[in-house]
Image (tube, rainbow over all chains, first blue to last red; front, side):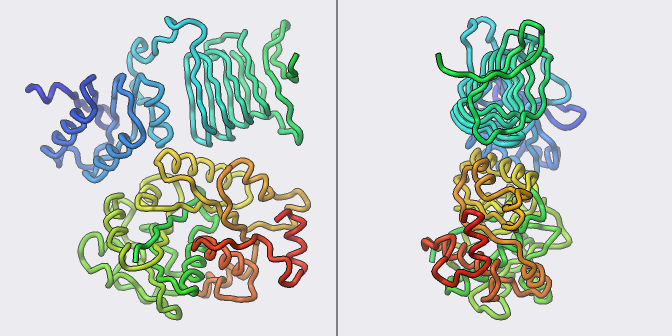
Length: 227
Length: 264
């Protein structure tokens, strides 16, 4: 294999092709990928392609550009697998899968949150619309609404400065000490560890509320007031 | 001329995208703009039927893209309004016959030809939808006051934001003020509360819309129709005019009083 080819690896899966990138620059790898495709158009024509970008952080315009370039060549990009939460979110926003049927080895899927201590949180400053799924191995803070059809799964607490109307799952690794709170807590479904509450009906005058598991092991929702 | 390219989309099917495109195109053209509408629903074309141009189709969008005809040959001139054109979808092909860059090329060629290009998006969020929004300067999302339609609109708005096509505007179609009043239907406020985008028009439920679509004469050509008036107002808002949502001093009809009660 010559040097350019070692930048990216292409292998066949049961349901398409998997392209694995290295840590070289995005532009460089993109160019290599496109030239590989152009060298063997008949091989790639009509292929379903999953992309493993390792720890690269990719933004919307880069992924859109890639998707369009591939689609012009008759290739459909259906999944982007990444270790970076930013890239995962971007892919989800574009409606791309972030998992493929053959999962990556467990070690590499975990981002190194455990080493960062208890304060690790993902801060999201926008409204999560239907179809968005946020998964994070720490706390999740949203400044905005979580609309019906959106989903947050956090290993730690979930704090919503806005309306929670989608699905929230705190303490996803069975941590019963976690809480979910929101200015308007009206989720489609709320889970803490393995306890579930479904459909809290929106009230006309919402007050901030906090959901937690009490001493008896019951998931309850209580009003929150300052002081 | 430098055309503005507007894509009408919704996520969910059957909420009135094609009807909205036909009516807005007719209303914009009636005000003197040169309008080209493109049916982006390759394989399930409808816009030609609603505009009553079905029997004039010779070439379609795929013929243009694949070079079997010139752009002008595929532009069908409307039977009544001479500055309204339709580029029909191909019926015997599917969405894969067109790519996002094909749409961009087509849009580039049309920009110098007219004032507005209206693209009718297919339902869904797959390739056909991606093609339809590829060239858009502006996107209008159509929804109905139904939970499922609003959910899909929310998803589509999220995708538009992610693709840098936002902020979209909203048409709330088929609102029934009597049902809203009885709390049997989501109100405009309920929908806007969730979607949080600019409202460009509310179209009331109106049987005339179906009659117009079946006859190939969109309801916005009927001066007496309420829905037609709503579409004409939206067309004026698209051109930048500030049109009030409720024209109280006009007549104070029963309908307008109901609208007022509904909060608009």
